[in-house]
Length: 470
Image (cartoon, rainbow, N blue to C red; front, side, top):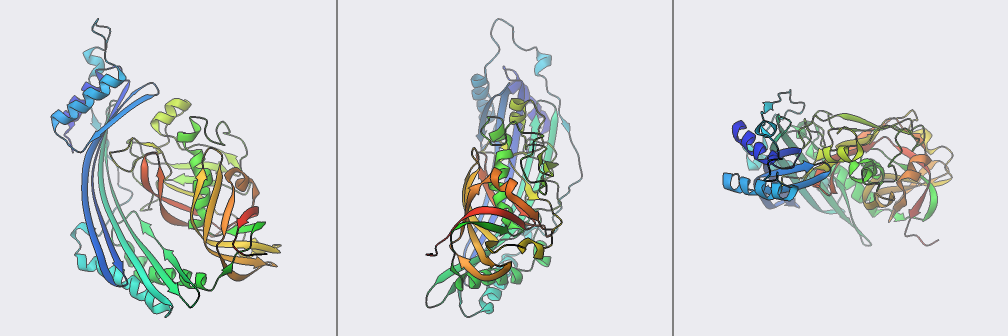
C-alpha cells in the first residue's frame, strides 16, 4: 500500500484540475479455489492480484482509470489522463490556488467487526482438501443413486485502502470462505442434481460449526428429491417461497430497483416513491452490511464509508434507497455506505450487501391455510430480471405441489414469472423463520458477495411456468 505522503502528493496532483473530488483505491487480494470431483482433486488455483484505481468528480461527471502497477511514472500517467479528461485550470491563472489543491490525510481507525481466526494462507493444503473429502463422502453415502459429487472450496483474503481529497484515509481487510457442493443423482429415467453453497465472512473456522458433512448431505437430499419429482403444472396460483435463498427474488426483482444506480437515472419502478406504500403492510426489508462475519458484510464500503443497516421498506412503506457517492450527487442525497466493486478494475456504484425481508408473525403451518392448489418453492435457482420494469423469471430448484393446504409431492421444471412491484403487494403472510443464503451478485461494478434472505413468504397469486401437460 502507498505511504501517506505519497498519497497526499497524488491527490494534490488530481485536484490540480477542474475536479471537485478525487479518490485513490488500492487493493491486494489472494484468492484460492480448490475443486474436487468424486473424491479426486481436479484443480488448485491460487491467484494474487494487486492494483490501484483513481477517479475524479466534477459535479456529476466522473472519470476513472486503473493500473496493476504502483510505479510513480504509471500513477502520474493515469492522473495526467484523468485531469486531462475532467479539465485542467486555464493558463490565465483562473485555476485553483496551491492551498485549494493541498491535501492532508488523516487515518481513520475503528474496531474490526469481522475478525477471522484460521487463515487459509497458512493452512496446509491437505487440511483444506480434507474438508472437501468430508463433504463428498457424506453425499455419496446418502444413497446409491448419488453417482457423482462436485465440491469446491473458495477462500479470499482482500486488503483495501482508500484515500480521498476530503482528507480521509481508511483501510479494511475482508476474509471470506465458501463451500459449494453439487450432488448428481441417477436412476433409469433421470439424471438430476442438487446443491448447497454456504459461506461467511470469516476464516476456515466457519467449518467448525457448518460441517462439510451437512453440506454434502443437503446437496444429496435435494438431488434425490428432484429425482422423484413429477412435472410441475403451470398457471397462476398461490406460491409459498421458503426462507434463506428464497430471498433471491426480492434481491433481484426489488433490491436492484432500490439501488441509486437505477433510481438516480429514473430507471427504476421505485424512483420518486420515498414515503409511499410499495408493499403489503406485512413486509419490511433491510440491507445490512454490518452483520458480524456475514458473507456480504464489510467494515467499510469501497468508497471508504462505514457500512450501515439500511431500512428499505417498513410496514410496506419505502423508507430509503441504497446510495453510493455519485448516485447521491445525482439524487441530492447522502451516501448510505453502499458503494461496492469487484476489484480495482471497476469504478464503484451502489450495491447490496446482506438484503433480506424481516420476520413476520405467521407460523409455517399458517402459510398453507386456505390454499387449494399452489406451489411450495423450498429452494430457488437462477433467473433474470429487468430492474427498469421489475419483470423477472426464476427457476425453482426444489419445489412441491400444495393441495388442500398440504404439501403433496415434489415437482420439477417450475419457474416463477412476475413483476417485483406486484409481488411486494401480493405478499399476504410472512413467517417468522428468517434465514439467509449466500450468492454472488453481478452488476456494472462487477461480481460481489451478497447475502439474500427472508422468512417464508406467501404470494397470493403468481404465474408458475411448468412442464406438465394438463
